[in-house]
Structure formats: C-alpha cells, structure tokens
Length: 148
Image 1: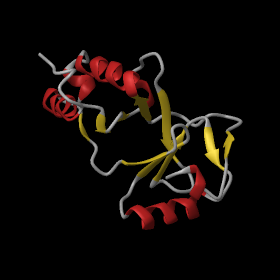
Image 2: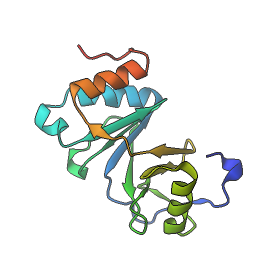
Image 3: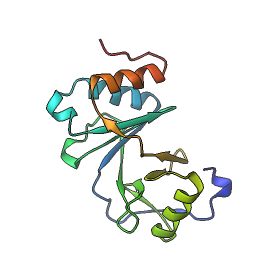
Image 4: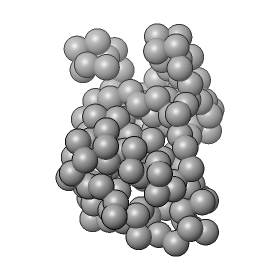
C-alpha cells in the first residue's frame, strides 16, 4: 500500500499494545532468522513464522517472542482481530472498517498493516517454527542463511 493511496494517518499509541508478533526487515530479519535457529525445539514449537521479500514475522505469546536488536512488535487490533498493527502506532480511522477494507482489497486475512516501511503483510500462511520451515525461508531469501 503506497502512501499516495492512504487516506488516513498513523498516530502514536499512548500505551503500546502487548506484543504478539516480532517484525523484522532487511538485515534485522536475517538476524531474527538466525536467532530462531538457536531456539530449543520446545520454545520454537510455541512460535509461528512467515516471511516474504525482506520481512520476517514471528507470532506467539509475548514471553516467547524472540528479541534481536532492531526488531519491532505487532499485535492484533482489539476492535478488528483480523488486522494486526504495530504495538506503538495505530491508524486514526476506525480499525474495524479499515480491517474490512483491507481484507476485501487483498482477499486475505489476517493482515499486518505496517507503518514504516508502508506494507500490508498477509499472515494467513504462518507455520510453526521448525528447522525445515527456517530452511525454506532461507532458501526463499537466496540461501544466504541456510541452517546447518
């Protein structure tokens, strides 16, 4: 979604939402991927991940989410659970209506609406974090971070 077609603005949340996803872009995504590969099987099994292009999204309980320097966090909207948003930012329009409009436009749900860079990321293909899934993500990214 480009800024030119956006008819609303982001506002800072007075109180950040409780994170249920770690979101990382570019090199931070690669570091997060590497961190996931170090998790024990029990911890990894409590997480789900999806990736595309230059982003990695990992969902799970707040206490289970991995941390690396530069990672940001997201959570589902209280008024529109199919719409995930950054924990520190919210749209200045009704989130339920925005969620419905985005779901109709992208024909997928749930969706993560990201502030910077502007992006809409489908979350309907989250899979459990496992060595095989991490390997598929690495291969998709070009094999630069294959797991031994």
